[in-house]
Image: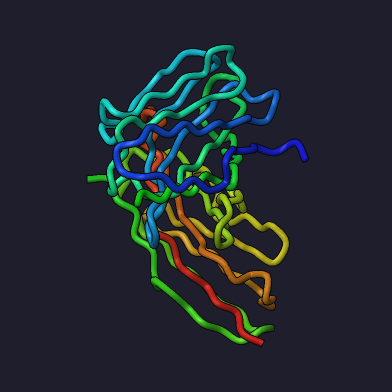
Length: 117
Length: 114
C-alpha cells in the first residue's frame, strides 16, 4: 500500500505526558498537512509543510504542539504536557503541489486516535 | 466569515435508494469545492473536486453539482449500497487563500440499511 500511513493508530496516555505521532506521506508528494478532528466535526487545520519548510501554523497549534519534517519526507507531531482537551483524531494528509492553483486532492491517512486519561 | 454548512446532519436510507446531500458555503473568493467520504475510524477519501467553471462531476455512483452563483453544492448518490454508510464532508477553498483556508463542513452521516 503506497498511501499515507500514520503511527500509532491509537495512543492512550495520562494527562501531562508527552506524545509523538508519525506520518509517512505518499513518496512523491511535496506537501504534508496535519489536522485534528473531534467527534461529529470536520477536520481542523493545524499546520502544513512544503518539503521540509513549515509554511503555515493555525492558531489552534498552541506552544505545546510542535511539528517537524526534517528531510522533507516523514513528519512528526509532538504534543507536550497533554491535556484532556487534546483527545481527538490527528489526521495527516499529503498532496503534490506543482505551482498555480491548489486543485490537487489531499490524500489522508487513517489518523492517530489520542485519548487522554 | 467563511463557513460551510451541510445538511442534513444525518440521514438513514434503504439499500438501493438514491439520496442527495447538500452543502452551502459563504467562502469568498471561491476557488474549488471538494467532497470527501470518511468511513468510521478512517481518514477522508476524495470523491470529487470542482472549480468555479464546473457544474457537475461524476465519480461512479456519486455525482456532485455546483452552483457558484447561489453558493450551493450537492452530492447525489445513486443506487446506494451498504458500503456507502459513512460521513460525507464538503470542503471549500478560497482563491489565493492559505492552506489553512480549506474550510471543512461538519459532514453528513449517511447510514444505508438493508
